[in-house]
Image 1 (cartoon, rainbow, N blue to C red):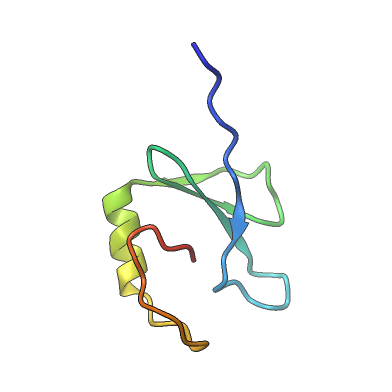
Image 2: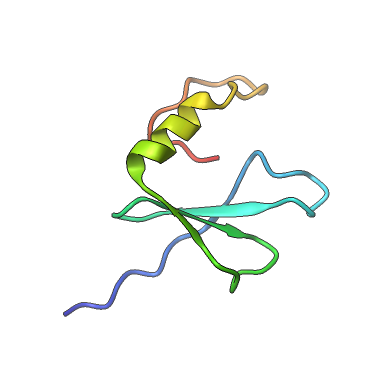
Length: 75
């Protein structure tokens, strides 16, 4: 049986600029993982695709312009 892939983490664009309020996310086959970026060994929150899509759709549009949000959008 193959080993599971290591998640590729990315920092949320909604995180504060001071470095004190950052979260990281990683998309997997089962959904999206969320963790505290300051403590990478901290517990993870796992979110299933329907909940992640509803969450992303509920966010306001970015102030920097660009297109709308799709269901696989990053924070």
